Image (cartoon, rainbow, N blue to C red; front, side):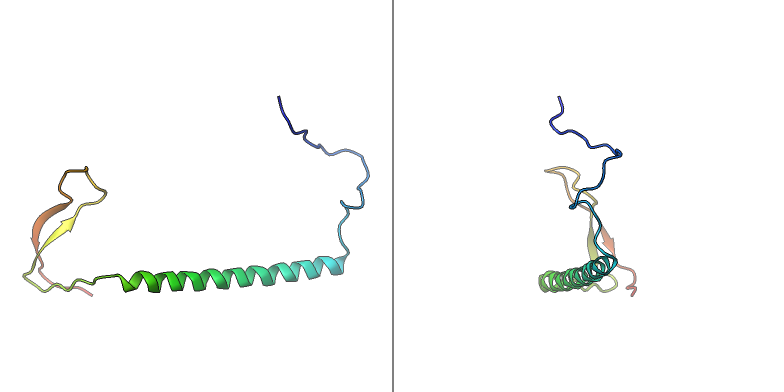
Length: 96
């Protein structure tokens, strides 16, 4: 039924591979891990900035003035052949 046998805690002695490293080795590993995590975080931030710049190149900003008539996009698509927009609304004022 189960292909893997679960190891449960017992009173067996630890083998050479199971023993913990010395305190100095543990600290070196901890500092190395911290440096690696810092580098990974920096790379993720740089990738997000690059992705945002790429996305912003394709953006088409719309400029509206008071008394312009606009259509509002509905939320999620209501249906394949249904109208995606509502109204014809008049712009009353522009807010920052």
